[in-house]
Image (cartoon, rainbow, N blue to C red; front, side, top):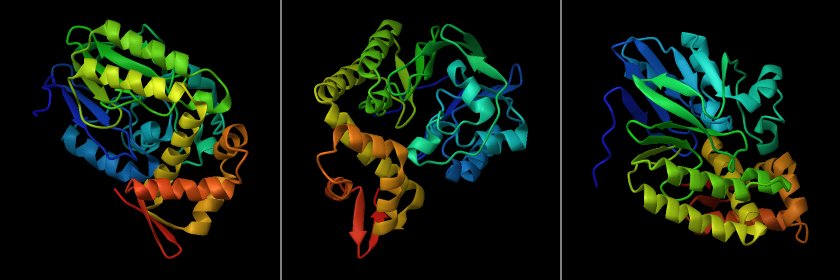
Length: 308
């Protein structure tokens, strides 16, 4: 199946699952360049090299973050150091970024990393941006993250969806892990995407796709499955966070991985809220077994090894 054709001023740098996709805009008519989302901090040098190659000698003028999970903004600091681009973030995150409150920004809670960065502008639902010579509407996308936004180009019916919609699902519904509302918001986001009538979606992870109605249907089915039992969302979140750590480190001792899991604040809260009937050691072992069965890791002696 051939990839959907995008305007010549747009280029998608599809990344692995540790780093979110990067969407680069180069408008030769105006000279303006912009990048949506910047990957994870341990990939920052790679992100910088990919962007520099694609810019072909041009400077990077703007960064736009769909949301501030570590895999979407981890390259901000490196790109800011090199090009001093203007950076726009979701408005609700402004106070936390200004004070670099890592707990509020989720980095501390998830046991992940992000180099400190600044910002110059904020994004509100209904704002309009000009990127690559195309007008883009900012669309609020709570659910996976309460402050997330998407970008939609009405004239071309292209949606940059972040983690609100993938070809097969969406990101972990994190608010529900702390007893806050997230399933309802995710359902509303999917309904709003339907009203946009997008013909092409550029997701935060995975390939660009044009079977938008099929993706929405699959996402709704996934949401129904998770919403019917909160433990399902919690179990999925634990596996995703452990896999993310393995993607970051590639190899780690069994004891060190357990120490990370048992000491990570969000993992502690998930265990207390959803899994307290079992010791966390049991939850850890069950998580490794499930990921090994799926081919996502291997245990070799006292080492836990990432498998792609």
